[in-house]
Length: 228
Ligand SMILES: Nc1ncnc2c1ncn2[C@@H]1O[C@H](COP(=O)(O)OP(=O)(O)OP(=O)(O)O)[C@@H](O)[C@H]1O
Ligand SMILES: [Mg+2]
Image: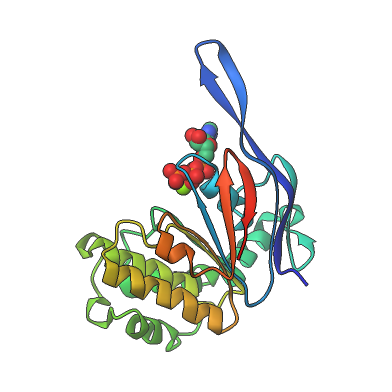
């Protein structure tokens, strides 16, 4: 049974031009589905609609047409509160810009899902465990501005793993990283996948794309399944 799926999903933006406004389909009629244990990779040129598709899958932007379902339920028919809870617990998104909170330490960025869930959430060893797993224990009390790009990326991944989500959605998690950091990031995603998470990764890198058990290519808003 599919865990997360897009059904004929399109996202249309209004674009300004000299002639006024024109509709532009960043994502066009996409069917996509992942099940438990899947590792899906999506490649495609800049502007082909990859981030737009991921934000719809991650519960951050409703499609203009079509549906996104998690465990069979239309996620955009949920209330804002229910959708936030789903994003906090079940579908983690690692944005292209990493989305770290500059006024929180590395430690608090990693346990942000817990902080957001309520001030009284109990302290757990989870943040320490993840800090260790991403090799950042020494930087726990630094702020993001003191970190390198690769370190920030690892914090974003640790945060996304905090609540052991059912689906991990990552937007170019290895871009601008050296080979060693890229390998570490891909290994973290593979480990989450081995522990049961479905993983969806957008990547420019051929090597990372080969990690996928199901592979896709995006072109002008259309998604195409690549042969294994
Ligand atoms: N909020 C928006 N309003 C209008 N157009 C948008 C908006 N967001 C994205 N677009 C357009 O939709 C297209 C797809 O953008 P998207 O960010 O999904 O591309 P991408 O495949 O992720 O590219 P990249 O590899 O550069 O990250 C682009 O042409 C972009 O200009
Ligand atoms: Mg993008």
